[in-house]
Length: 229
Image (cartoon, rainbow, N blue to C red; front, top):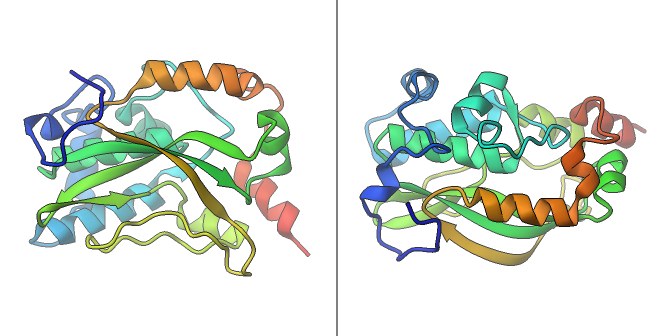
């Protein structure tokens, strides 16, 4: 299955299960059964995006670039994941529910991480930031289910809601008006997870992050502590 950018129109591939987007896995099917709401594609997509956002904790301290570690069902089983596994999970959940889905990627500058993460990464630029594109009412709509609500509260961030009409992308500023997220460059849309390309870029750009050196602890608690008056 190709992981190269595709044409705008949805195709059977956008409903297919893959080793990474394992939409037929029992955990994925159970998640859809528990969280799908509404009678229209838009209503169901909104419910599922918010469920992925809040039921799976965002954690960039624990990055596993193995095929198993990047799988949608693994993200569900662990109950946590960073932006790319959560985007993969969202694609799997959507495909399981009969909603065409693909992955989108961009490089972003994050002004609101933790000191520990910035020190380990050596930069505030996050390459291959992942989101999900869902085909709803004749168009691809971008959804970013990465930051769970409780994490947004700890960091003072505006939560990313999804209405099934407008693209849901990171806010440029937080609740206090400070810089939050800046999109630096787009990497395109993909039918499946381009894991080899992501892993190669990460190993070159963030050797310490990939090794996990210095990233013990809780990302949410660290962020809350740094912002506590």
